[in-house]
Amino acid sequence: MLGPEFEAVLQRAAAGDSSAFASLWRDCQPMLLRYLTALAGNDAEDVASETWLEMASAISRFQGDEHGFHSLLVTIGRRRAIDRTRRMGRRPERLVGDLGLLDTVAAQNTEELAAERFGTEQALRLVSLLPSDQAELVLLRVVVGLEPAEIARIVGRTPGSVRVSVHRGLRTLAEHIIRARVTPVEDSSIQERDD
Amino acid sequence: MTDDRAEPAGTPPDEWLVDRLLSAASPIHEPDPIAAAMSELVGALRGAGTPVELAGEGAAVTAFETVRTGRPRRHASRAAIVGATVGGKIALSAAVAAAATVAAAYAGVLPAPLQNLAHRAIHAPAPPQRGTVAPGGSQTTKGQPLATAGAAPTALPELNSGASTSAPAAPSSALRGLCIAYGKATNAHKSTAFRRLADLAGGASHVGTFCAQVAANSPKSSAGGNGAHGSPSPPGASNGHGKPTQRPSHGNSGKPKPSTTHSPGGPPSHPATSQKKS
Image 1 (cartoon, rainbow over the protein chains, first blue to last red):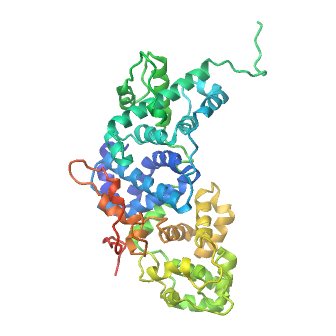
Image 2 (cartoon, helix red, strand yellow):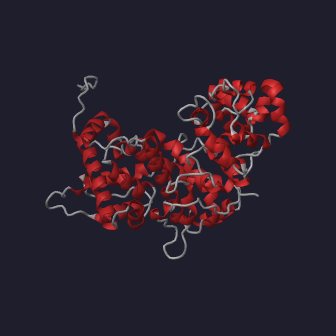
């Protein structure tokens, strides 16, 4: 979040200042990419580029605060990801919501998960194992930081169901993380110390 | 729906937990282990951008500049294109700096020597055997970039329906693929994609602009800005046309309504943008 700076940066970007646009891009691109990965898989970067291109021409007409800007950005990204999927006539390359895989993945990464704070990449991998609808909601809420009411408008659900779904998704993942941590690592390379 | 599963008995969902976690600047201490793990998860998901995620800044800024100025930094003159027919590869580089010419290459409407070069360089179709020239061909000699030119509406459809004998399934995919490869390469300047793009763009320093043009002019709304230029698209095609209506205003500021993204049947709207210079 740019916070108090946002308004001034937006104005400069809207006037064509490319360094201000770069500030917005740096601030928003990671979350946009993380979100789009859930919708477009390997195409996320391409969709993000298209999204920014559209934003480049829409930005001078944008009026709103920083949340509104993020909301617009993911709305454009979402539509483009869906368009791309339709155009290709196939299901999106989502990293399939397969909770059955969750324990497997968690078990493979016990060491990482056991670390005090595991990394962004690993957290995203876990989220991608949720059912895709739920993964999208979690990302919009947690990564993009939108309020449930905004998310509800974007995805066409009720704020209450968004709230519950996000909570349950995070909770499901948290349970798996805990399970992974208490599961003994079956690894012959680990040797007990006798001394 | 998995998210409709009932919570375990005796643990009513604390729906506000997520709000608390999100409003905290850093992972907060939660006595409950599950809440603590959720807190960690939230912290990790909101981690700072990684270098990989931020690698495309240069390309994004170049694209922004191209969209905002509405023209490429280089202009291919009519003379350059005419000269290219005899001038070989050097002239070709200058000529294809105009995206319109690239479109022409895909449409197979360039003079045969140029078309041959384009065929080899960007997998555009080979020159037609009988020298047919698409009606849109003359448009390509204006040297106007697609982003601003009247040539765009006529040139773009040629990409898919032109006179070429065997247009690739996705005519611009090769060129866009090069640009995408360039954008993704960590060592872009050493990549094959980059060398080919540099040839086409007329120099290494023009590749960013060139790719922005390619993206902005890709058919079927695969890139931003496209919808604003009146390129023909099927009614209801949900492309860039929706964006002006996304502008949030008062009250629920900044909350675009997805329902506005489908334009009604009829001619595409032509929102006035900074790119539309007539």
